[in-house]
Image (cartoon, rainbow, N blue to C red; front, side, top):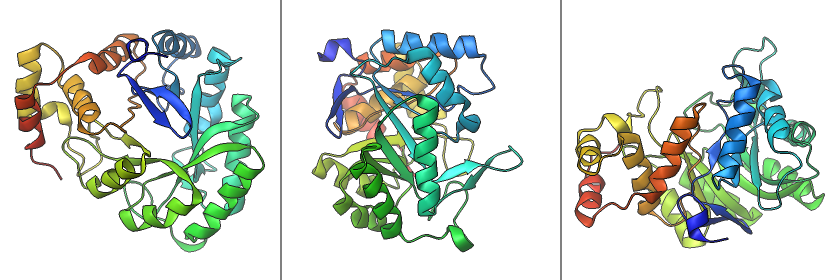
Length: 294
């Protein structure tokens, strides 16, 4: 594997070497035809993507099934990362929490069956102590140690290759580290650096940092990066989009950042991957670093 062959260069997640720009498959559910989803996944892999992020609770398992239809039998270097901690609601609209150990196990089993895998390379435990999203209440308030014990058991059984964690503050991340955490997924972008301390800890420990909402979100308090005045100015200077500037900044900001920007468009996919070729100048990086963040 060479950096030139993989978008954004090469990073690591656990023991796996991956392209630093991967693909987040959440949007490949019912809003995209199966034929288009399969074509887009195959194009992503053909263009060097070998890190795909998914979950059994994405569109009731439809996303995982499409990944399997598109890519199985899987290439040896393809790293599929999934997550547990939520489930579709009984009404089929939105998500409910599934934080109890037995529910985490059921989530892993669902991922294995839908993806057609004997082992999922990395599974992230999605906590529900903090926003965005639903905060755990009642029986869904589960001690972290109990959850990690179940994840470790699944790893020892060979169903999970490695354990990641998602949506955590610094105290929770620090508690989780002895379980052998290999990556952290947190909300993070140029304009939302509230989790900078967690990123710094991951950088020190050599853990992958995989931001969700890397370009902002419709959720309150997650500003759209592409709308920022400094981002727009720099995008105009170098002839790229604001979104590409936001992704390029993330790659430049820390060497352990891995991107999983998702899209249902092949043209947008190419734009995301091309962000890995952008070299921001020292002055441009300084101006972006000084942009107001949450």
